[in-house]
Length: 215
Length: 282
Image 1 (tube, one colour):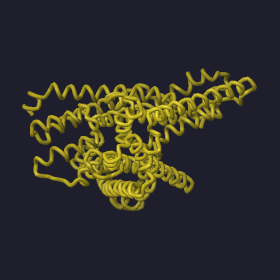
Image 2: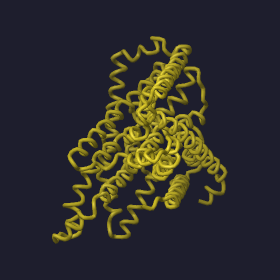
Image 3: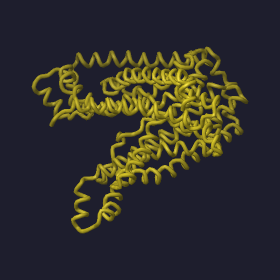
Image 4: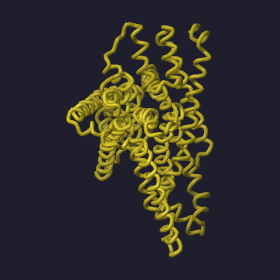
């Protein structure tokens, strides 16, 4: 433990920083792209609905490792070079967006049709219904799944290690190669992941409690 | 879908707008495809010579074996994770506090840690303690552990989803706690989680792609070996990735079909959207 924190704290922290960067960028990216996809999927425009469905179907079923390898090593072959870290972020965002889309769609559908009919019958416009009836309720029911999505993206950020980027997971193996510290290095990395996950879950639970609808 | 409730039937003006946007979006989608096609074409990735290897029986046999290895790893991991997950769930539901804490700890640990980190533990850390796992075990054990932790939560969700009245009825006819759980709660809980369990299989299949890291000859790793021989990098990874997607789509469709069927027969399947480890995205 002493050796680990004495000599390798900066490396661990920079690995953690890479993990946080990938997670943050991918999560925000997945939310934006996922919202766009969900909008397409509930829109009255058939080709947009179809395209978004196909996208979701493909990216929900692709192994992220395979996608990361394809993006990072494959795209340069056809003249697009995203680079390593952005490539990992791109792959993680693409997959995360498919899950975000489904989460948001489920959330929007969770608001009962009766409420929307009621809102329309008292004369609210479409944007009024969205703003005052659907979104506030859907947003609440989506908090939990969004935390799950965040944790999923956090864990998925370890794909960076597959293409040799020094995230938390890769840093742990690097330190382990230099110094035979056994399990301890990995335990520290695991604790860091667990801490972020639990933190996110805590924030989510607090938010859910704060915004809970009392019925 | 709420769409019916949300929108009026479109009038003439709205219909015109819908038509215009439809045309524009078709153009946009076609444009994106054209762009992708151009990228492939301009870089020479579409040259027939680059794809010829996939028409050779040797390559196809090789990929067939790779697919078999993928299914083998996924099958073993899935089969091992089921009983392990059930045990963990029972432990977490137990009234014996130390057992409950232990199982909760194990479940939460393996849900909060990337599979890859555990694979690294098996590759780099455990050998220092004299534990040398085979390539297959280095891949399958970590996948099993993470899958079992997730499945444990699915099982637990199934048990908790059963109405309290079931347990109360069992107890009131004089069954003991254990009997009630074994003969009334568990069978029903297992039944309602079946679609969710099938959906979890997708995650296990995806995780087997880590064979690329441990050099187990599943699809992705075999693709890499193939590329070392042919040099057809994008083509091979694309083909391999598509095979993964097709396999997983089949499983997902199966899960949804099961869910629908169970919905019809009255035993409402536990929603497939039930808390799943988004490691699913891995």
